[in-house]
Image (cartoon, rainbow, N blue to C red; front, top):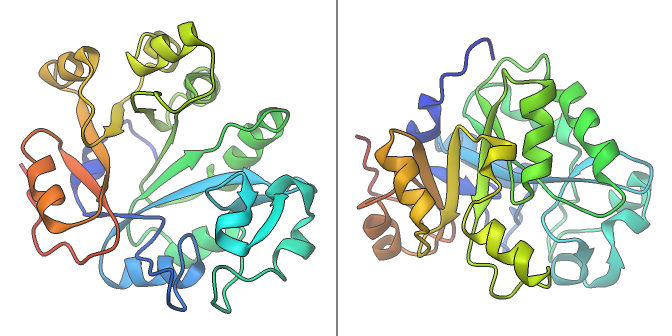
Length: 250
């Protein structure tokens, strides 16, 4: 991207982890799910982390238990091992980020979440940049961890960046850090172009950010009523599990 134009953030509906169905051959964060999103002209939200051999892979959870029924972490396996493991009950396997970029090829925007995993971030951040630096389509990076977003602000300020936030009530982080993160007090580190909040969470700094002209989106609407209601405040709404027959563009 050559400019800091963030207008693409609310140009398309955003499919959470692709346009997926975990009971089908298009499970979450699979190439099939991303292909279906492109076919339906949905922007794509996806998640990045590293394999043991430092390949940038697309997968949400730290471990493989929920999606692959294996009680080990993604980072315990080299990618040659991960690509042999099936997602849910499908024939799909965990894709490399570079293969997703090739598939999407600028057809729809990408909202790229960087997973913060202890001991892996120093390798993840530059490796992701090497993969996206020549990508021609619209994209943004985001993370719950403001230090990851700050890395891009300091080193590659041309990249659109977002700060994820929720109430952190179920988090194991220290109480003071939980307070700072949930109330967006660390935004001075990330200086985000947009904020991505839980659809039922409205901290005061989020409201102020929007009043000052900032883009605010939310995650994750799981039915049409949640989706429509969220547009009362948010500029765009990440969805999953249904076909969004309503899209409100200001």
